[in-house]
Length: 202
Image 1 (tube, rainbow, N blue to C red):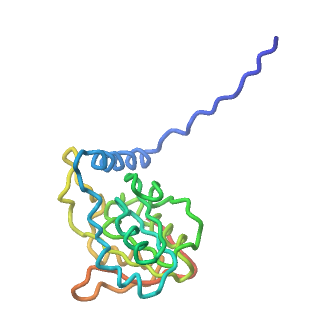
Image 2 (cartoon, rainbow, N blue to C red):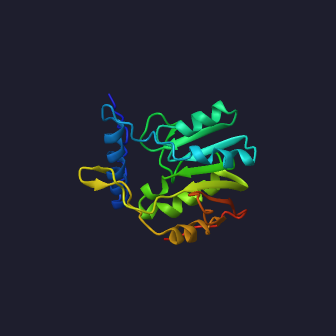
Image 3 (tube, rainbow, N blue to C red):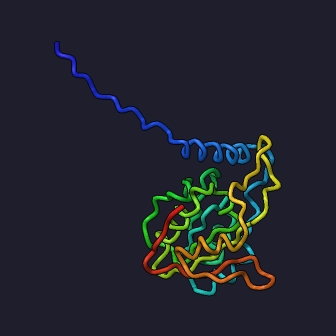
């Protein structure tokens, strides 16, 4: 009898960056599974809903949606959307922000509220490029970004790997879109993606 051997494939070894990503995700999984926790339910974008509504969008993609409260609220208002998060099961799509696997050009508006600072510095440009890819050509974006260290910690470590001043973030965003500084009394960065989608670089 002849035995046919089936080749086995060995998964590619994790890179140092993959290991860092896994470590960060583990913090949020710990928070998501902590009994009684409300972390991820802050809905930092609630006050931005009038800004979202201005362009009469048909579809919104919210990056770093946490427990997806914003998208559920938009749906109640008649705006369809989808929330992406790499840890919370309430998200419509549980994927990292830099690699959503979503179809290109599906979002009239891309949002991200107090989520970008949770990225590793290595993933900031990748995520902004992914947002640009997911948005329609010259689609709108609305962001808020915390520029202070996290007050929440897991195992003694904070949750904001990328604490940078606002001007640093605006320079990064300028690689994929045209944005203005938040108006007085507002935290929201509003703009449009460039039609060529150009990015990235560390």
